[in-house]
Image (cartoon, rainbow, N blue to C red; front, side, top):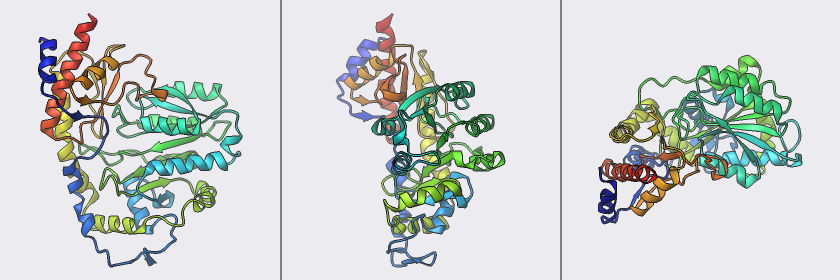
Length: 398
């Protein structure tokens, strides 16, 4: 192919396309329009007047919904506002101000967390805002490299936690194996410092295929006597409405008792009206059936991306079975070039380096693809642009 001629042809079309963020499409959001028609005049729910303050852990029935989504027992789960990132921020604030068993983090000379890479840019942004030092850890295709995790924890006294997106990891799409989860719990149960696993289970029910079984980390931790090391997060933001979902945090009873006084200083009660309408909605709509309808919309987009990538001979890419992202791996030193060329053609991609702490992908080779928000027709054009830019970048480096 004459990539330069194709590039100029596409440039003349003055396109405006965006594959930057993992957002639900309008068709997906429409699946939950029933939320808007739930009975807004029934203000008594779970024996609580949902218009008033209180129920700081969330409505009991919504905590049950959260447990179904996260795949754990309700006793661990609180239901909050609409943002799991807010709950992460609030929990990190608690760790810095009060701590969880060994004093506040702000009394430490240095606080570090392990960050599997390629990873989620918003985790990295949170750490930067809190001044937390980030240490990259390699992913293996079935979760973090356990030998690397153990070596780093054993050799660095400042490590206090680790981010994990265990199912359909952002952006690789990989799933942590049972052996990996068991190994992480084994390591974290024996650290000399209080070291936490931040288990961001954002894609717990976002399967593209029927085989969706996944381990309950709390059940596994309980057998090892280390439930306190796990802090789990999730939300319904990509299940119902991205701007009006319900976020969840899950932790041991011991951790709940320590976190509750701090959390109570931040809020007097969550948005129980929204929690109640979610419960009403899923009393009428089966969660698994609802997610299958999401998959019917998303899977053709993933298939299109993979088939387009198969049609050319450059780089490598992931083939996830769920979640919201694929990852393209170019040759070393080409990611920025490909992204810059795409920008010239009107295609926005996640910035090079966003998959790594501090925006530093030292090999400059990873590009995250978020295909969900646009239509199939738009995605088809976007992938033609992407492939042209890949080909031209490789051609210009030869």
